[in-house]
Image 1 (tube, one colour):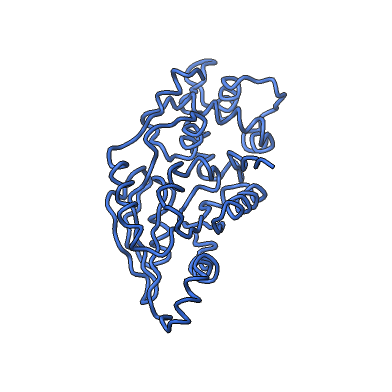
Image 2 (cartoon, rainbow, N blue to C red):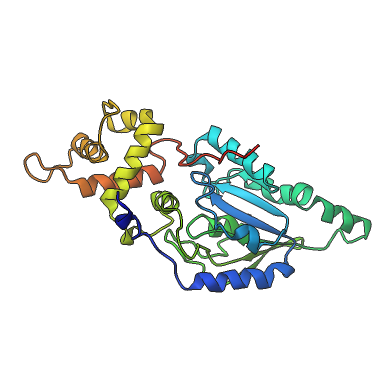
Length: 293
């Protein structure tokens, strides 16, 4: 894919600037920030300004959709975030896996000093207030609904549903401040944009779906070839072009238009859908950057 095609991935609704202002204005109301990212692309699914926007508030990073990600890679990412100064947990907001650890971790690790201070001052009943942040479609609403035990936040499988801030009271001791989905003003690294497109964080409507699927297949052929062999019965030599990979998928699935012509658009939609639903196996799209010694 050339740079001209890549630059088409520039999705930034106007409410993002408003969200940045909302975060800055409401930080003083909360004790800690809970940031939710996609386990398959933990760095790409973070707003790069989040560190500066949260201004040193204690933080917990939740690696959501961990059931879709490579376990080994997820543990490396947990260590990466912990070494960066934030506590981290692997969760799955859809099934609820790991969520029982969230609030105890906030109280015993993320806000340990504050909890001890409140205990000394006889303020153990004071509510803990948490700001929930994350890019669109990463699972914030599902997290809040799971923690609240009811559908308090609107959940839709499309980017940018949460538009305004809303408080959700879990119990007498915990309150959540849900912020609108945040995405950056521009994609400086186009690989980040592509990873987000793979996961569905960017609407498919603005993308060349076949080019996107070809890029995903190229990555999988290099990093997870067994997944392609098993799912699509492909015989990989390592020499296939991305177009050949897509055509081979279509051929194996019988996606023919007429004669020998392959419906590559249908094959592309299938590849992306099956990756996003986990049918291709547990896959991580990026590894933690190497720290300078």
